[in-house]
Image: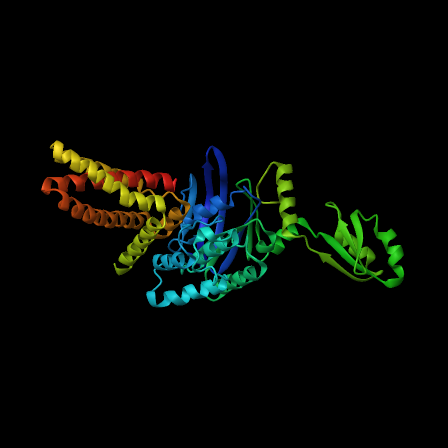
Length: 308
Length: 143
């Protein structure tokens, strides 16, 4: 057994799953390593939630293989799966018992989750009386108290405010680096995907691309070239650079932002203007743009294989 | 072993809380056995069919066990954590706890009204009615 195999916590190969006659997953392969935050990134209906349910063992795939190094992972659902007539405290106590957390540690673990997810005021209210955002926080809390080596989180940050979102991200980073856990996040939010170590892009149940954020960005190219012209050449620069296959040019804080067309070569432009500019930098594309481009490519080629 | 007992107990506490906070189920748990008991007590006085009651109880008990399929989203999530076996064990334990409580109430009421036959009739009829309605309600409420 190689060192990389030892590190693999979840390995799924060619998973296929059909629901009500339509294909939800079509030959999806994914690997999650120890001490890693993986992201399954894609638009709604791409099969992210189905994939997580298969990885959690809640549903069985129609075909394909799935191996997990540890026991069952803990899963948090996109739509909270909570008993409406129980309170957050009762739910957390129940799950702490189910996860086998020793009684003497339970109080501390639950307290930590209540503070982390800002549930202090809602802790004794019934779930049916809570807002959708608070329900989502309870759903996350009941998963994050799990000592399981693998956590599967479906749209974990949707509905959370900025402060709680930041706290949860810090907690996930801590779980990864200090407790060496494996975390798989399914999300359609590029701002969450960008914080993950590795991203698998999914669309219509098929993997479009896989890799780090920078690798995915490099597949598409930069979004824009930001040029700070030398003061005296500002006026002329607009005319000189305006025809370099740029889509638009706009001034922003004294710089010119040149949005590039798909077939343009930013390096060529940078070389040409280097003598006339005080500073030049490439602004990378956001993951939302990367996703759009990957989907468009896949539609154009009628092929959802790894983006070429 | 202790861990298993603790988990089953935690799930049983959940079931009891859910029952206690769900008015239709709570009312049915109290009113239905009393109504069933009154009918069966009257039947026991006018007819003599105790074995039928016993058969009925076993049939309905089977239906209840089958109806314990975890169907709500919350139940499915808990079932994924605890395992289906533990989940079922907790539900059966809850059903037994409720039945013991109902049986105690019915026996007390029936023994003050009539003799041994009336008491067994009331007990069998009451519990059977309770189980039947409980099973139906569980299916409806968890659907």
